[in-house]
Length: 457
Image (cartoon, rainbow, N blue to C red):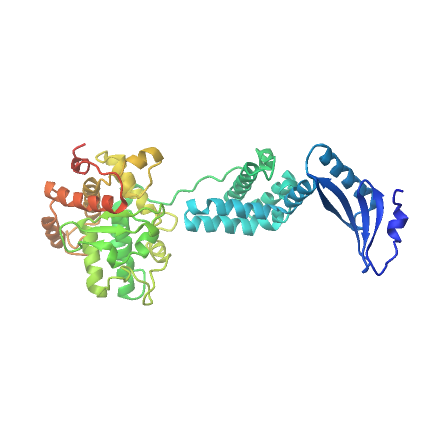
């Protein structure tokens, strides 16, 4: 006899558990504590098995019968309803956040650590609070759009697009793993606010560089001569080397090689570079003089910062040089990062230097990954000549009317002395070739003939 709803509702509580049978293997399992559970007994592969459909009255009789009928369809198709039920349960419990964290863990090893942290932080701040708890397969396009609209409302248009991109990548990852069948973000095309216009780092025009150099050379915008000198030297060193602000701020003396020799080089370790590749900076005579002066003033230790902060063992603040620009009257006109653009513009407009040399000097990675895998040339000799020419140009820009001192803050005779000890001849090319070979040996990359870095190209 089929079970009636009232029988299930008023089933008596007994000292021992018992069953109220409905048919087709479905029964209500009544326990001594009053709990009532829907179960279905079936056989698959010659073995007796048991399915659970939930608790009564949360699952009413009609719903339990529907689940039983679905299970019988699975049996007729040769599938184990217990396995199907487990898979459905796993899908229901796989929320968007779980899938997103699996996606992030799968790709984190290939990302810059800081970038990977930013991506996850962005998801935790903006995405997970809105759709993170939702089952992956049930997130609607409207929910994603509502999440993006909240980000857009605070004016963070670039972040809103990045958030949408991350959601899309999570769904592509989920589809590949069989966790979802559709990527709802494909329906958002045209619904997002337009991408904000790119704002390049502020920089002066090339013909305004002389005024900028003279402003740096005469910088007096801070209390205390030591702080003024340190900020002035840091700005000038950044301008001369085309380095990023963080690379200069955290530079330590152990990274400087052959400072008092013929071919000084700044070897920036990979962990401090944006592209996580070691970067070699041939030092011009102007940059060398700044470093020698800093070393004499600071009585530097090998592990100490070249441009330390106000407290011992602390690097210069990230805003020190930028505020220096502000004090010189260059707010919204020139940033420290914009120094790199000045050097690049000068080198490109001169047409005396190959783009490869310029991009390497800026520590830009090769866009063509195949070419990058086979081309390990550092072009140190050519870059050394280029940066020395740039140093001479900067010096000439900052030369006062009476001809002394130079923009580097030292007597011009000292620069001449450094030039005499650092000839730009084939002898220098040979020594720089040794530096390049050292890089190639350490990184176990492809060797090139000696002429590849001697300028014979």
